[in-house]
Length: 257
Ligand SMILES: [Zn+2]
Image (tube, rainbow, N blue to C red; front, side):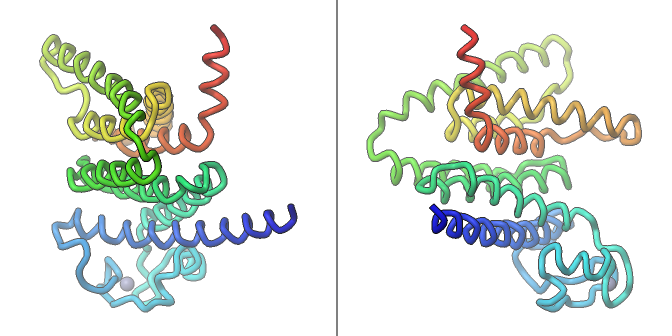
């Protein structure tokens, strides 16, 4: 028992670090992509003075705290997005490590990493890149074959796909009636990609949690911001909540009937 706890603590520390490093790397790649540069080329630089950053400047969270959020070379503030992405990466990897079955951990870590990347992209440019969605689909296919062995799970996936399909039909009807865009195409595509991973009940909980989080955020923001709030990051948060902590909630709900 004690030995299990030590292994768990060890795994938790490494997963948190891995997530934070991944978050740092992704935030950097996405900020380059948003600026119209190739995302995976060149060294990391300060966004203000352009000074090439050393390995010591790039330790997730730690470097930010030590420098109090300022560049060592020019003193300009480091964008808080980077710290947020590091924390989000570290925390999501840690939460998944503590909650999902160990044999499925690889699938869910890649899933969370891709969701973080598309959230940052959606936040920066109000756009969910198809390349990330496609990687999400490929990741699920690979793990589906590796984990399930047979194809009996296909029926559940088709059932889950009915959720975004029904939503798409409703939205198209609403857009036809009101003659304005109600939901971005990227969000619908993301829901279809999530349907490959989640049961229909999990997907509904994800949608509900995402909407609630988005509404709370929009309310907190008030009228300070004119641009529409991107939905991708909130769907991703809803998905993380559902996968790690949603099972008792779904059981409780079905127990009501
Ligand atoms: Zn600088």
